[in-house]
Length: 98
Image (cartoon, rainbow, N blue to C red; front, side):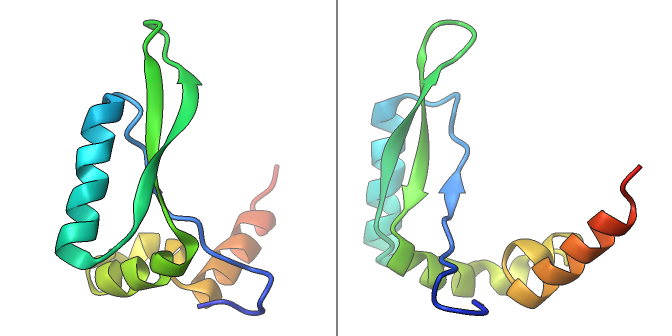
C-alpha cells in the first residue's frame, strides 16, 4: 500500500456521537474478533456539549484492517485503501481546481 516507509496509514472510525464506553466496547470487539488493536481518542466537544471520541486503529494493525475490508470497498472509495488509487485521485482532484 505504501510508496515509501514514511507513509503510514491511520485508520479511524468517526464515532463522534457515541460515548467513550461504547467506543471502548467497539475496540474490544475489533480485538476479540479480528485481533485489531484500537483505542478511543478524545476529539473535543460536540455541539450539545458532550465529549466526542473516535476509535483509532494502531498503525501496525491498520494494514490488517485494510486487507480485511479491501475486497468490499466500492470503486469510488478505492483511493482510501490503495495508495496508487490515492495518487490517481489526488491528481484528478488537482485538475478540477477552480
